[in-house]
Length: 317
Image (tube, rainbow, N blue to C red; front, side):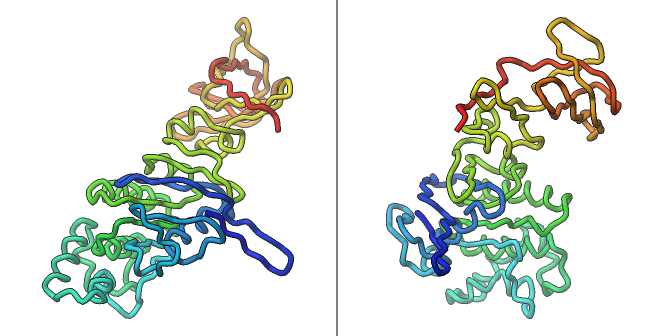
């Protein structure tokens, strides 16, 4: 599918020939920087945006012109989208009431979802009395009770603090495994993508740059953009013999004493992240980010060596 926005003579291709398939029960994460086209792609799947070209199929059936409510999908947004005048119970129950289910069946489904999400004691509260994490659990409960073919999640954790994001990230993955519902999840956070995905779709400027498992994308990035974007520390990139080369910080060895074949460098900065020392070194080849078990002091002379088989190379241009 493609999505083109036009303002006068200006044309913006928010999604440009985006093509992929998702298998039943799979958890796929679309990741990329702001403005890369990931949310536009999700909104086209949901029916909130019409594709400018191409088709979307669900179970082999073209659904391009079906309205959102007819697509058998449940979407979870970053802003929760809860009804402020309704209790958590009524927010979760809302899609079931619209379907006309009986009260006893609604109560049973809402109770089961609340127990799964550990929010049973919150069902009588309104959103104003809930924390951000609790609101997101209520929004997830509303999606679960619908028993859809597809969960669509658009940056659902971006409004939460780091501790809550980590906790809910685990719960979302466990929930998806328990329910088995096919899930497409959008985020700009590659750490979330690594933790959640069966497969990852990396996007930039409206294009798909790579599709693969988190391990495949981390170990064998398709191009310098993916290499630099994917990883808690960005890959070091430099040019050499008309090639773009890259190496991850953990694949650079660091020592305080000289050994044959090791290159002299100056440690510019260094800090401890609780597990390892992270530093920036300057050598003849350029400036590199490194991580090491060695304690680091700024403006210290060190020696470094690349793990040769861990160097990635791409043709320039």
